[in-house]
Length: 313
Image 1 (cartoon, rainbow, N blue to C red):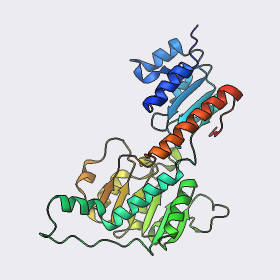
Image 2: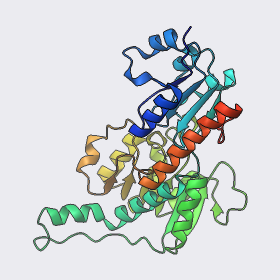
Image 3: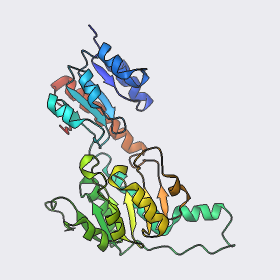
């Protein structure tokens, strides 16, 4: 019978891959020609899966691992993990919350400032030798404006804190008001979009939020509004957003996530009123090191105590 105890779904940082292999004998699922068939052959004793928000863990993988007890994930998002299948089996799931809040909020606000002040556009303008030949268009001030936050969780709260330094008026939309939050709760997302100058999306991904920022919400934000997304690409009706940006019905956007990553709608590549980033919100040396540390701490805690430190389930 196989003695394999741990399977790694996809490659992480090289030193993390090495540590998982050398310390725990991890099996590298991404290297297998037929991953599910390989799991059925070698995964009968596997107790732990290590994965990430990018790779997730499918119901097929869970089904192929009859003794699976824990899924340890690198990243805060868990919408790519088959939660129902894990819940039905009593499988623990951990993620890496809190350690990336500041960097994600930093990037959200960077995108907001870039989209409003046209920094990426200005960079292209200078590099193309247009300075002195044509007039660069006026931009939009960020300070003193109205900020709407879709999803006032840990990251949304950090975004709001940064906005206070820009003297912005802040309101947020959650399913329920957040206890102790000093900002106004708006129960109607459309009303929030119509009110604010900037709508920052920091809610969780998954089936419940697919298409939440619909054409109706985008139209409510309007031709002077700017949409920022550091959540998941699925939260926004991407085609409706592209059309609104193209037609001038939406003023601008700053996007770190997309529906079909790494594929970005071709029309966005030609628009100067949108700022594009390759899903880098947590992409700093400091934050990635903290995420790696918490991932390994969750794994070690489960192996020694039977309980992960930061459970989702």
